[in-house]
Figure 1 (cartoon, rainbow, N blue to C red):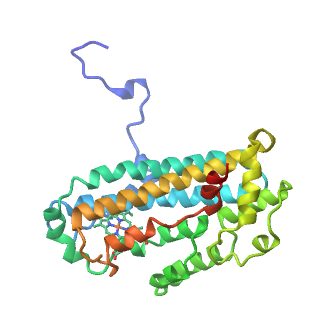
Figure 2: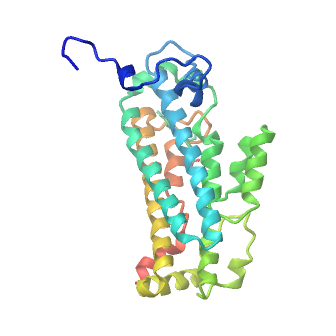
Figure 3: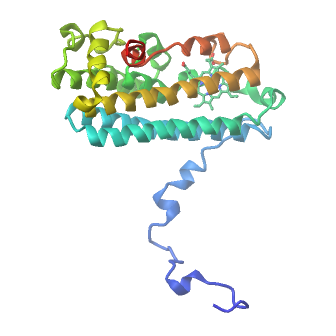
Length: 280
Ligand code: HEM
């Protein structure tokens, strides 16, 4: 290549004509994806707000895909592939955690300029977020109600609540490996949130006291804790960003706002895995 001739990638075979053939834009449906940022106001910062939520929803979509497959793999005693998928889910949440830094560049003055136009819409109504919670094990029936007006979403939620959660499958794997798990836990109503069980904690304690003898279950436990760790950080980053941007105003979704989100910081997805640490 000479310095005075503009470089043309076609010379080394780059595809330059796409009439009738599938291009990058076609494959990724970019007309649809990039046509979905419809600001309701002409304020500068609404675009950031929309893109931050839409990208979060895309990552949540992938998280659901991975959690569903990890759960099926655990059910089939295929723990190694499950570990890989759970690591990916943790990384997705790490990525979502880093994304808060972009949103934090929006000041209260900037958000106030378009907040009223959001009406009553709020992340509280994110059905993918709720499905993630339900899939991993936090199954509060009250959270189903905001979706009652959408039969298609209700179908997904009902199907999710009818099957054991990710944590149920992990506890069942413990039992299959010969550890003593109380029968009532194995036969519980899976549509509800799993309640803390001394018996389940005792089974995890056996694993943690002798990792060499139970390496796969030990690794499973740590993958779950990793995921919950990142998820907790996501909740914490959310509430901190919210306080920074709206202070203690009520949420557009109608809750007390920061007070509600602080309450959600107390949610424990895998209670025995956190409390067993005190026993070791
Ligand atoms: C300036 C930015 C944001 C503000 C001021 C804000 C505010 C709030 C508030 C006040 C709530 C409580 C429910 C309500 O009454 O509305 C909430 C819930 C929620 N928000 Fe945000 N939020 C922001 C950004 C985001 C982003 C980027 C996401 C990503 C998808 C998100 C997802 C959620 C979710 C999933 C909930 C439900 C949490 C739960 O029920 O545990 N929020 N938000």
